[in-house]
Length: 298
Image (cartoon, rainbow, N blue to C red; front, side):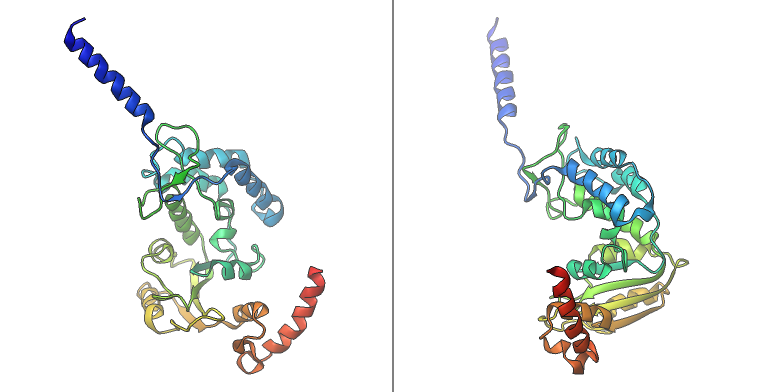
């Protein structure tokens, strides 16, 4: 063997060793949620059997396979919304008219108000949203499994598995919403209640169907112990109102919408905002409901 072949062989050996020893890419986001398959399947069955049986029968195993196929084995920075099309089609169901509830920066309050589809059906209360809510997931190029160490954030790359999922889920939800639409925003958010960019601004409002939506109610809810930064007709809410007007949607805006404020007062009964003078019969309502809730809990 001549010197050239010896050098070439040594180079190849060293390159292979370096590739094998190369550290995995570390992202800034959480790794895949442990037991992801069990969670997805469990949530799917829970939704169709107990949360919202009106959606009818769904094949939860097929739904899991479609979800997995969307991102596994792919570079986690090259996952696109269309990769989830099969999953979206398998989970699709009707959204009752006038039950759609959009939001930004007040997820907990929104889901308390919706009460698992009993009052309203925000995206997180649809089957697709119910399955994926609060989960993390990603794969890696050429790897048939899940990455449990870390996943990319949107700041690191926009076309990541979770961003792509929520984009197509948001667009689909908006397109299938009808009747009166409610938008609940946090009036105590620094920088404004209506953020731009955001899923609401970029993917949901542009996909409201003019022929399906009768009117839109904007609910600007201040946090009970928070500042009043944004209000109807002011700052970022004025921007939102201008966007809706430009799209020829009929809308009304409500500051601290009373039904939702009453719900907040259950947790903050001594807050000045919950006094009789501010909420009319709210104080009486709370004084009646709190003992009843205590009896139920115990």
